[in-house]
Figure 1 (cartoon, rainbow, N blue to C red):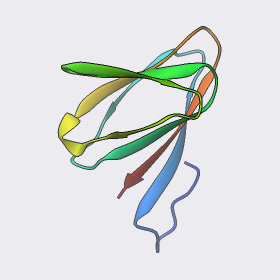
Figure 2 (figure 1 turned 30 degrees about the vertical axis):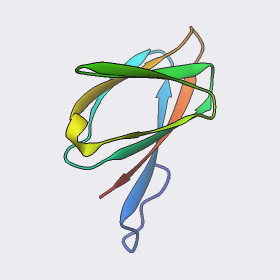
Figure 3 (figure 1 turned 30 degrees about the horizontal axis):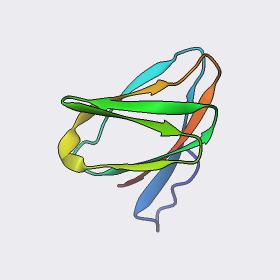
Figure 4 (figure 1 turned 180 degrees about the horizontal axis):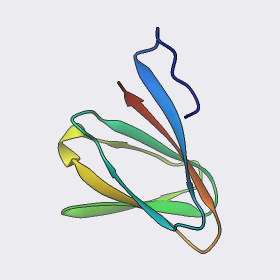
Length: 86
């Protein structure tokens, strides 16, 4: 976690796709904002769709998506920053 103070209504997390090239996640009835900050890129895949993000690209994952999987593109470490409303 990069930031979450009691007076803030959101949190910011850093996800590192290194030794584990993919990670499951779930919107849990709230949207997620994902931004690739290091590495070649990342793929966001959900039931019925997917999107590949290059370095510095951002996507908003709607709350209705529910479960999704984040995968790194390439073999090098990828870092993604995720912001969400608590």
